[in-house]
Image (tube, rainbow, N blue to C red; front, side, top):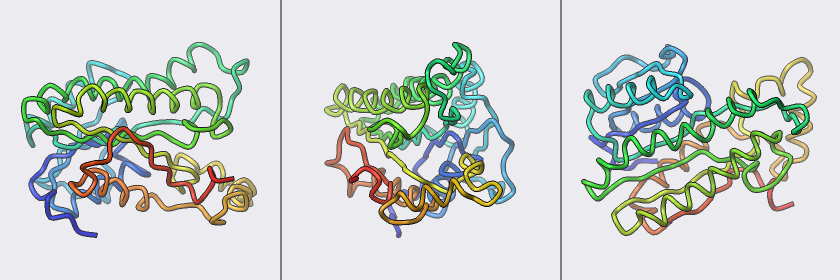
Length: 248
């Protein structure tokens, strides 16, 4: 899959050290884009230090650190034309009575509020250029119950609503916003499902019509399309990558 249009464009990706975020970084670098990569973890060894990459270590729940990381990346590589709000965490499928306030606030700060902060930090410059694309990471848990616990499901539902409103408010000014709703993706975030004899991973695969987990690059491939001019008329929508989970 090749998109020549990304050559020289700047892309911002949060959650860039592993899983889907790492695959997105690698996918855009392979398209000769410049990438501002942000994660709380240090740069992984698979990402070579190049002039195309500005790797910033920051906790997305720390407003000061996150905005500083964005500004440092912009100073190095320029204003992003594309933003992938990918950083996120799970909540252990805890129902509301097993979720204390601190855990609730931390989950929403990571999965939801970080997207708001990133968006509001880069959107003014995008509006000046009359061009910008947001690919926000939701989940099938943003469309149905059962994909997470109370906090995760609430956050992912909110991301979908936020993305739709973001697009509605700024679509006539050159901005596009969509989100991806992954199902079972084999990433380090889901490592617990594969622990031991992998019973949970096998159960999930068995319950998925496609009978398998997806690889992170399958989500990154969709990201490339949604960020490209080929998707210019796709606005405010949710794209599941779920092996048919939602069709049941």
